[in-house]
Image 1: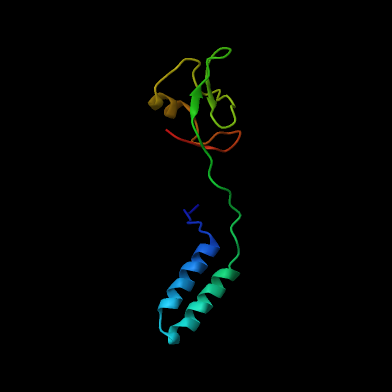
Image 2 (image 1 turned 90 degrees about the horizontal axis):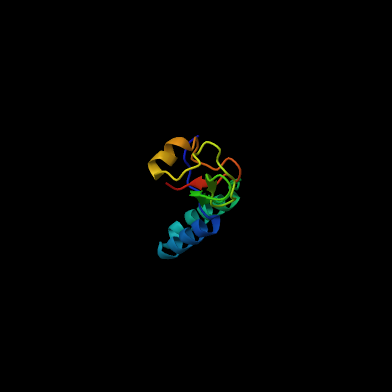
Length: 104
């Protein structure tokens, strides 16, 4: 999957409108057309990225849980370890329960 930039349509439209106001009248139709084209583009089905980290939870037998949803990661040790070891043992860069992207 390719990386994509998601932007607010209204911000792009406003930026072009401001640019159009600074251009000679002969160019304003082209800018207006660009604004209209942007307005008609389909929207992306995207959600904001949530960030979390694996935090040590000494309750019960110890272990690591997602700071966002508190789901335990069974791949992690029950003792406190370094961040480098956590990154190697986690098995994923995302929480399997809530989908939060893990910060290392």
